[in-house]
Image (cartoon, rainbow, N blue to C red):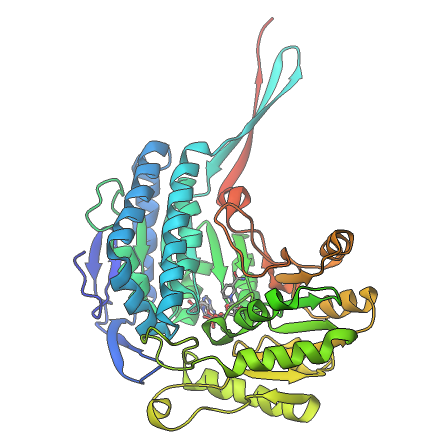
Amino acid sequence: MLVQLDQAKNFIDGQWRSALSEATMESFNPATGEVIGLSPKSGVEDMKIAIAAARTAFESSDWKSNSTRRSDALMQWAQKLIDRKEELARLLTRENGKSIRESRIELSACIDTLKYYAGMARSVFGRSINLSATSYGIIDKDPIGVVAIISPWNWPAMLMIREIAPALAAGNTVILKPASRTPLISVALVSLIDGVKEFPPGTVNIVTGPGALIGNELALNGDVDAISFTGDTSTGKTLMKQAAEKVKKLALELGGKSPNILFADANLAKAIPILAKSIFITAGQMCFAGSRVIVHESIHQQVVEGLKIEAEKLKVGNGIDEDTDMGPVISESQLQSVLQYCEIGKQEAKLITGGKRLTGGIYDQGYFLEPTIFDEVPLESRLAQDEIFGPVLAIQVFKDEEEAIALANGTIFGLAAGVWTQDVSRAMRVAKKVQAGTVWINSYNKNYPQTEFGGYKESGLGRTRGIEGLMEYTETKHINIEFDE
Ligand code: NAD
């Protein structure tokens, strides 16, 4: 590990480099407002050098053909992360604001994902089909080539590893463009592979800097074969238009407005704490945050009261304190954006708890919000439609199953949903009808490297995790062979 955690550099072709301009960006602790480190404010020329390095590594090393090497490399990365987990969890909390408990969970998920794809690297299977007495079709799986991975700040470690692990397992080389709010943790994760001889130089490159500038270069440069983007739906749309120029392969993991549907027979003792956790985790800055509760009228009041109690007992504070349940949001602008939604909510719905900035003491230095719940939110309200990306829950009420499904499907998003009932037939019926890439029945926020994840509708394109997540990073080739009788 040659780079200091608070003095990040670009890692290009196995070398640590400043931006050509020497310009830097500051990382802030959202809980205290303090500057905690610097990273390169790279430009297009820096990105071009990284793209060229990734291209050369793909063309000239044995990475794409040596699956044992790739498997060993990913396993070593996992082990290095195990050894440094606590130190990096603390950095993650300081840069992102999330609670230290969450940071540990996030890094454990990274380790699990690296291990899973270390195994999968040896199993990039194709198929074969017998076409006639003298011919076969071999359906082969090739790596795509140079893959750009653009990631957001909310789960910066996991969302980068979630893509890089399958991309590498499939034999690609990669360029990472982390979010400008969380470059330190992203560079720290990459620094773990410095000196690991199984990674040929140029296999993994990271370039920090402004997304619109250097992200744009990834979309336009002909030496980048595919882009994996995780972020806001509107940025995803921009990228899609840019990538169309060269018909680039594109995987998009975008926003959500995910509902939890509670039927009258739901186990509320189990559901209510999970529902509260599903919206207040990472201060609501989570793509599949359970940001809507759609509840049957017969249990409506009971659920509102239960959620209010859960919200009000959360300890909001600096994430580095072991007993903090919810940290700050990422920035002042994010906080102001969430407060604007609270104002809309106060006019269009019924405020149950929260709705304000927290002030006084440590709260004055950071971006702290009260856990907030609005009830009786009309479907057409922006509170029910927009991804707020903050600790704001919208409750909606239904009379029958049909109405519950209509409410659940009534947004442009389709990332995840929860269905809560003891009736297995109802659970399956509703799960089949809800337009979402993941449906949890009597649970929420259960994610595994081996189960696919992604969005219906404007929540994305393609799937991450699991076998499909690996196949996203492959090209399919039909090799047809005729032999003599
Ligand atoms: P964002 O779209 O602002 O930024 C994401 C990344 O894109 C950053 O690295 C940014 O620098 C880069 N970027 C910005 N403009 C770009 C451009 N024109 N070209 C190329 N790259 C560009 O998103 P964010 O605010 O960092 O993250 C929050 C969003 O991410 C939310 O909408 C959330 O739902 C979504 N998200 C989705 C998933 C998922 O798996 N579906 C997971 C986490 C977050």
